[in-house]
Length: 161
Ligand SMILES: [Zn+2]
Image (tube, rainbow, N blue to C red):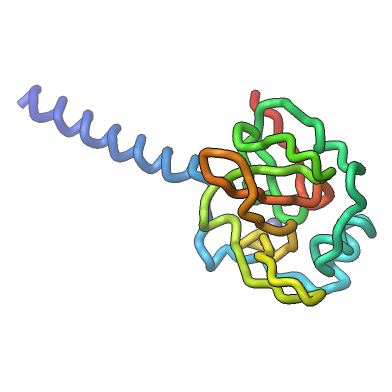
């Protein structure tokens, strides 16, 4: 009887543990989407953040504080705090915009065809608030060969504790 109790305890704690890991993945379900009016976004964001995140703008090259940030941590969405990129996938691209060779996962970061300005590009967006982050190119380094060219103004850095 004592053994049975032990088994139950062990299996319960492993379930609890797997739920914990689920939470740590930082993904979200589509029902968590954030929708705000233009005036609500304007009130929450600075002019620069608004023009990039909500109006698909591009910040001036070499202006982001995060460009040369080499600290370990997470890059999260400035508008809704959804985790988007890990510091260990950041690399120096020389383009003047923070660059990553991989997104945190394919759920949080959405890739969409963009044919504006007569170019065929892939737009990168936050899946939760639909905020514009930047563009994806295929001239990145190993191991993916991808380059997520991201406006620093659409990101917030969360240093690893
Ligand atoms: Zn967001």
